[in-house]
Image (cartoon, rainbow, N blue to C red; front, side):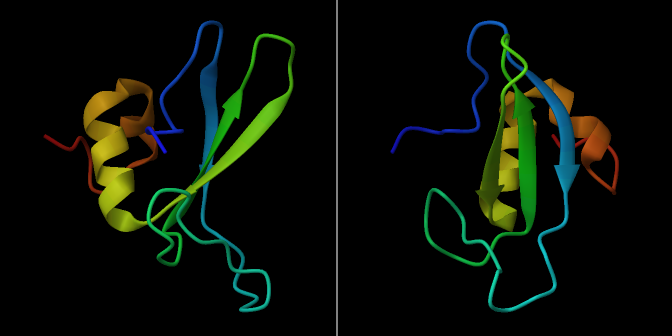
Length: 79
């Protein structure tokens, strides 16, 4: 699929939220299909927001490549 959490031109990370506790609405990782650990909220230049659910492993990968995500990592900086 190609790392959908990577930021495009004019995009910024505005939030990173814990998925819903409702098992009927639990999102899955956009990359591998496992249960999502976090949902990354990315704002585009036109103020449209996209939501990218990721599992723990893909969240760690995203934090290593997108420094803006480190502020949402509970344990401090990864890497």
